[in-house]
Amino acid sequence: MSTEQNQGARILLVDDDTSLLKLLAIRIESKGYQVTTCESGMAALQLLKNNVFDAVVTDLRMDEMDGMALHRQLQSRYPALPVIMMTAHGSIPDAVEATKQGIFAFLTKPVDKDELFDSLAKAIEIHGLGADENSKSSNIVTRSGAMLHLLEQVKLLGPTHVNVLISGASGTGKELLANAIHQYSHASEGPFVAINCGAVPGELLESELFGHKKGAFTGAVKDHQGLFQQAQGGTLFLDEIGDMPLNLQVKLLRVLQEKTIRPVGFQEEIPIDVRIVSATHKNLPDAIANQQFREDLYYRLNVVNLKLPPLRERREDVSLLAQYFSASIAKRMNQKEKRFTNDAMHALVRHDWPGNIRQLQNVVEQVVALTPGEVISVQLVESALNSNESNIEPLSLNDAKKEFERDYVINTLKMAGGNVAEGAKLAKRNRSDFYKLIKKHNIDVDNII
Image 1 (cartoon, rainbow, N blue to C red):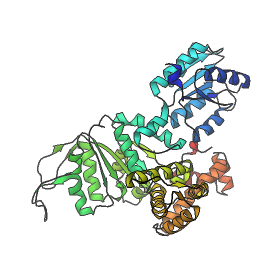
Image 2 (image 1 turned 90 degrees about the vertical axis):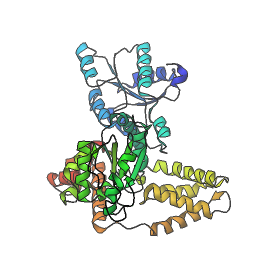
Image 3 (image 1 turned 90 degrees about the horizontal axis):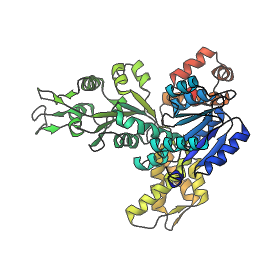
Image 4 (image 1 turned 30 degrees about the vertical axis):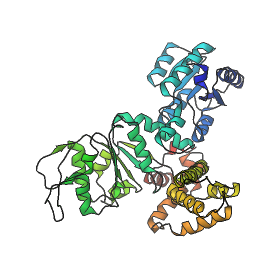
């Protein structure tokens, strides 16, 4: 790979030997890479929370968290990120073990610069120039490290054909993410068909999904091809799957098991080849406990779970999205794009966005329509935020309590540096009770540092 192709590739360099760290950084930068350095595995994980890298080069022997422990964390959180391991204690057993665990390359110190450059070039050639390209090709507008790493997972999942369940609050972009999975799949040339299971009355949903024969019920005046058949050879996105009636959940489970459907009024089975991606804003384990959702269907749909963060947890995207929506409106209306003042943009960024991206889009549409000139003022933004907030449907008391409890546990764990025992002390709860709260809200303690 040439130096020109390396331009823009971002390398995270981790070593507790500061002098070697500086020397290696200079060497790697000389080949056109962008290099970020840190002196510990914990610092590397912190950096990765809000930054995207194309490869990690790390020392094996480090205090607190060694290179292999760091790699295990990276493999769990960022499976598409290639890791190159260095060690002054190189041996054949170490190299073999590292290769077994998925290390991209194993280099012995003093590191041969040509070997290092060759490993970096191959890593980037194989894995690609990371998640910014993923973002462009998926039509998802983001610079958030969390979102870009999510797109890395999407790129890996696309070709696998496994069922994916997307979790996230309303308005976070679940359909866009489902479409990204479709675009990366072998079925990308096929159709992408979406339905909101909560927006169709239960008595019509079966016909909408599976189709029906003329005369199968009152009003069935002609044969109707259902969405499963319409999605043949492609992807069917079942949004708000948690709202599907129980009787239809049984039929959907059978479809997933048999790979066939039977339209209403038909006697014969029709084979289908459809990738299923589903989504929900509900806590399905709670729904299972309350006998509102089938456990066997949940495990069929939830082979892989992708969690979309709310907009308040990706504030770096607010300005990017606001500008994108403003530009889209200008293009649609064939007019000059309107821009936000610094104060107006700051007001957008510091807002909590309970309605997520959908709410932000509504606010931008409103302020663009009400701005006579080319500059959107902070007063207009604040007025739109106040009026928009009053139109948001409030959470039920139970949902509000759950949201508060989950946020409280997460914030307490952050204050405790991810240590559960310390978090329990801060919350003035015994450790087992605190563990139950963590499990109840599906909190990934390993991702809280």
